[in-house]
Image 1 (cartoon, rainbow, N blue to C red):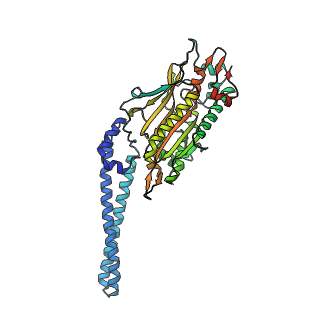
Image 2 (image 1 turned 60 degrees about the vertical axis):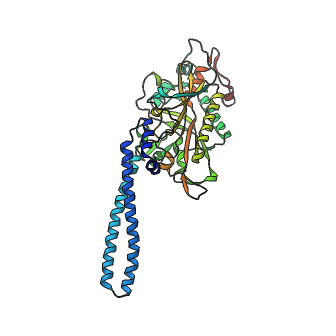
Length: 423
């Protein structure tokens, strides 16, 4: 949620930057400015009344001592009237604050200055690329056919048990999943991330804290009886560990990683681009989360990008990094970099990670703060990234490493799988 300080300092700049996300912010931002003026004016009126009440309270005591009972009663009546006025002022202030919050919950984060303009993914900018270029035969199979050939993933059984988008991993397919999860967690631990095992369901306050609610409510699985939500990513419970927390600045940064199953309804996703593992309703992911001082957050973002790049290099996959344009960014992000891997059999790029800096947007919702040298509290910056999401990594590994003898396992994974080839 945007801070009132940011908006009041330069509302036109906020409006201009939100246009990069193709969001027309003029009406809501100017409404917030006006409501905040009204709230501050009411606060001044109330403070003046409080000062007057203190004076009158001392006067009443003096009048009573002097035997001026009638004047004292008149003063008491004036005090009662001021208290009634203050109640009306409090109601106005509460209503204004509630309306401000309601508006700001519907306004996305302001994009960082380095975010390019654009409407769709076609306008994203390739920043960097690397990894080996796979050379496959013309009859190379896509991963869903390889999964069937080697009995690794049963998509039909998943449909029978639950529905489309809930695959069943079998044999070496299940072991490959487990190997990737442990590999990613071990690499995160080496990089200084403390592992968390979070709940897979969260309450409404947690969804609001990280910005999934109300923006993505229709994309989340909702347990209506208890008003819980299945998590779309471990970002939600892990970041909410710091909700309503004041951190000593000497204890920053906070670096956490977590493996979890992730659940997404993916409403409206159809067609060939969602075949196999390309888009699922349930999938596994290792997430990295950081809580930083504002002056350190962009250096942290670069560290996170380097970490994800290192994982892809160890998996021997061809990759590139995209700087997302405003139109392709999430509601809550200030800047996002997507990592994609090349799927040699499908002949297209598959997103496997998003690394984002949210600056103070989530922290303001969460009331996640740190105490600085000035002894005052300040909003933290929050960051997170996929390190990594498994489905499309598995798709690329199966497709890019297929040989006449079977599917080769990258060297970095072999200690985790216990085998070097799937045949």
